[in-house]
Length: 312
Image (cartoon, rainbow, N blue to C red; front, side, top):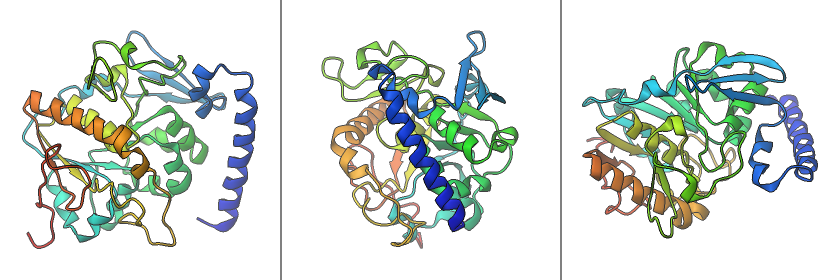
């Protein structure tokens, strides 16, 4: 990114932050999550089809693709790789990802250029990735399914309004912070969601992405819900290190490293959510493997595999 462009985006971010603080004064707290998209982005869900119409700064961005078509779409023996960006990936044979479906998360988009990986889908849930690494979006081939939250859609349109014209996009609506509606509590989620503990829930899992997904402070969990919804029978978590989040990601250097909050979210959000994911996989006969050799996630939650280790 050129320095003048970087400074311009920084100024834009400051202006938006100041405006957001002002809007908080006149917006009910239960609707504060909408300040991530208001006033630039407007979405309207069609009740009859479940698809979303979108407008950015008053101009149409078209209509989302139908999330319902993904139900059981991957019901075969092809392995599904959910690819993150953990530092351990530097020591792995990432070319092997081409032997299955590669769902690229955030910075894993760099693998399109570095390893020739053709993504089966792209999942981004945090608008800050687009703000800080938006140049990698241009690597996504045309017609690649893109699963974005509303806040990510706003950030994508801010960067390149025409990006969505050549790629099918799907709205990942946060079930606890739903678009256009007040925040919800765990017990309000409904029958499409599984709670880890109905009495004292710490995590939930969506079995129907047309009803929304559940966030666990990591994009990997959103991808897990997509893989289960699409009925993938063999799911591999790649680059899900967690415990070394203070190191540069596999495609970063110490100078270009961006801050990560995975360490802080591990005990309170990530671990309970992944335990629930493991339960869902066992109940459905889904084989799931953790390909990170250094992952903080215990083996009794997701068993470890070394299939991607270099030389094997």
